[in-house]
Image 1 (cartoon, rainbow, N blue to C red):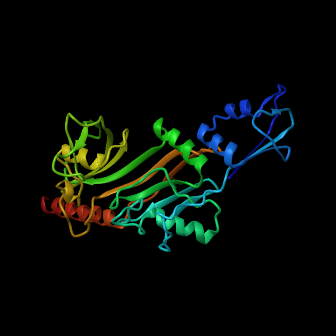
Image 2: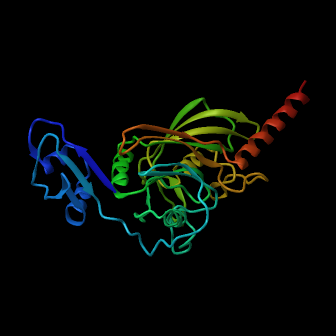
Amino acid sequence: MELEWIYNQDQEITIKEFLAQQNLPKAFLKTVKFDGDILLNHLRVPMRYNIRKGDHLRLIAPVERGHDTVPPSQEPINIIYEDQDLLILNKQVGVVSIPSLANPAGSIANRVRGYYQRQGYSDQVIHIVTRLDRDTSGLMLIAKHRLAHALLDQQVRAGQVLKYYHALTSRNQWPDHGVIEAPIARTEASIITRRVHESGKYAKTEYWCQQIYPDGAYLRLRLHTGRTHQIRVHLMHMKGPLIGDDLYGGPLTNSIQRQALHCGELKFIHPITQEPLHFIIPLPQDMQNWMQAQEIDQGRKSYGSI
C-alpha cells in the first residue's frame, strides 16, 4: 500500500517529525523504514531529511505475501462493502473465522485469501478485525493491509468500533433496556464453555428488547467488552439462553438449529479517510422464520381468547 502528502506548512521539519504528526503506528513506520520506501519529490530519502512547503512525500509499504498456513479457498464470500483499505462481509452460519488444526482450509480467512488471489491483489495477508463464532452470522470487518488493521485496532481498544447483535432469547420477560455486568470465566470441566463466576474477567453487555413473543424475545445487544461467548453466557446467566444454543441450555426448534445470534450492525470511522461508516443488514432467514411462527402463534392465542 502507499500513502502520500503535499506538505503545506511554512515551517521546515524532518520527515520523521511530520510522520509523527500523522499519528501513524510506530510498527508501520518501522516496517516502511526498513523494508519499504520513503520518497521525497520522487527521490528515495531517509526519515531524517527535511520536508519543505510544497514537497511531495510518498510512503510505500512492502507487499504482504501471505502465509502458507492460510491456503486459498474457492468458496464464495458475501461482500457488503469493499474499497482499497477495507472488506466487510456477511458471514454465513457454519463457517469459522480463522483456520484451526481441525479446520485448516474452510474458514473465512481461507475464502478471503482465495478472493484476493482471484482479484490479483498484491497484499495477501488476511487482517481480520472482528471475528464471529462459527454459528453466529453477520457482519465481519477485515482490513486489507497492515496500516488499516493497526488503526482499526486502536479504534477497537478505544471502544469506537460499535457492533450491535440481534438475538432470539428463550426468556419472554425483559425490560425495554438493561445492562448485564457479570464476570466471565472458563468452566472447570471444559476448555470450550464459559460461565459467570467471580474469578472471571469483567464483562458488560447492553441490551434493548425489541419484541416479546410467546416463547421468547427479540433483543438488540451491544458488547462493551469482548469476552469469549459473552452474549451467550450472559443470556444464560439471565435465565434466557439463546434459541438453538444447546451448548448453553437453549432450546432447539424446527427453524433454528444453531444459536440465534446475528451481528446486524457495524459503526466505525474509516481508518484512512476518517469517514463515518454505518452498515446494517437484515436478519437471516432462520431467525425471521422463528419470529414469523411466533407471531402466528401469538395471533392464534389472541383470537382464541376473544
